[in-house]
Length: 115
Length: 112
Image 1 (spheres, each protein chain N blue to C red):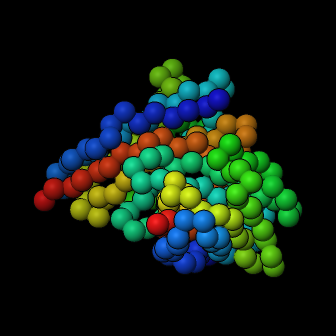
Image 2: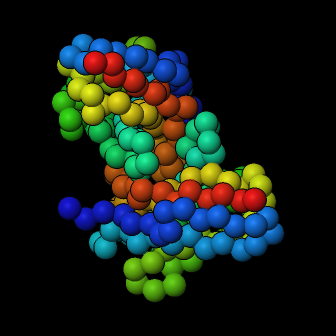
């Protein structure tokens, strides 16, 4: 069964450093998402992406964040200058279509720890 | 804006007993409703979803959920819990903005 994959599974970085989190969505999916879950809190939407541009972003997704689909398979989230409060689990998701009923399939997540 | 409430932070249930997890949503129209499960160290796996039709939906792993419009609820149930059901369960809603809004989650502990 096709699945969303994410690398690395755990990333430790120093405050102020740049990090890139990588995702490989399901191959025939067209819509891509990033969510994050700070420890003990809700899973929160960050951004959605379609046709090589951002469809929607939350207030969390400020200028420190960017997303890119550098090739036909990868979807990346970059945090330019990490802060302590960026420590969280980051989930990538993809969906075939953008219907409200369409299932978003999630990857296993990348745990980002900012020291 | 839509929101999801899961009133129970933590539920402990004996193996073989029934389980019900509560979910209430706030949205003007009928939203699309989902239940996801997150096992320790794992990602979010879809258990089931509702978007129209029969209000009782069946999912994977023996779970079912019932949509009740009058109560704005979408409670998840399983008749007989297995130890492997110990996990965190998230109710989520998609409104007209295509993004998932999650509840805070309910942690289920299964005792032998």
